[in-house]
Length: 246
Image: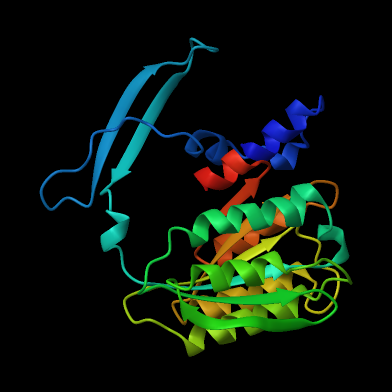
């Protein structure tokens, strides 16, 4: 939805592949009733006439899961995998990325673990896994990130999953958060190669969230596919309010 909004705000129609109906519907919050008792989710259903074709009917099914108090949520083992290639060097990419990650860091708890891996012409671990209590240290590492070089996305993903596995939390949320404009052009650059890599790693109960930034070389469909294969989710972030929502 946010990517489609960006195109429309800029006075352009989005490409067909950027319009995914399920994402348009699920972008918004709905006031469905919460589940009761031991039910894991509630179901709200509606059957009605189709407004644009009276010969058709529409069925609307809404699912509402249990709301979790994040203070009591399982511990997080997060590895930020941050694209610092030359194409990220703009305020709507690396600049907005930093502001968004600061918001996430503010929510971390002592039992949460965070590591930071960067990738450009080469990939590297710039922050070994530390407690979420070390907010100033985590933010300092993020603040010092600079963009330059080409994009070795495949090598960065391998290293990020390795770090996540080394700090694995049983019964926790073990997750690589890939932050990029989607411009993979060095290393394991084919979609099939990246997908096989991510499918293999999800068997270790380490999942993938992908956050897309910027425009121009944004590989929107590739990033959504990577997140799907990694049992994760994909969001496009076009401003700080969207970053806060995500």
